Length: 155
Image (cartoon, rainbow, N blue to C red; front, side, top):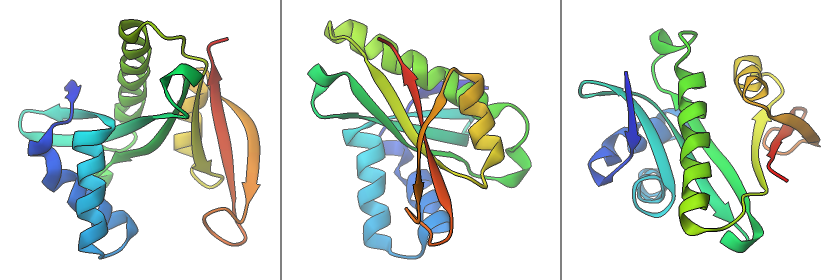
């Protein structure tokens, strides 16, 4: 299993993953793929030619603020879940964020991600990597459910 930065050749993976998770709006799926492969930074975990999963992060409020949001993580196929691939992706993502800020000579302050209260595997992965619950958001994405805002501090 290897990790690398996503590139425009990975667009089909991001389009299919978006359509599977968020509905059948092809135009939005195309925009999502562009963001993940050309604008923000995505790490893909792959075995030979098959992408196992991905995680995408983005700078918020300008690089000087030191704020980053992880806005998508996916292990696309169910048969790949529960094998530690999500943890590998988070580890590689954190290394990429930290190295990016070092290379740009800016101070990283905090990384955020929102995770649905029912996504226990996802919550546990981020906890394992030093994230904590900063706050919760009721009815944020789904009425009647909570999202937890997890954070990892560097200050």
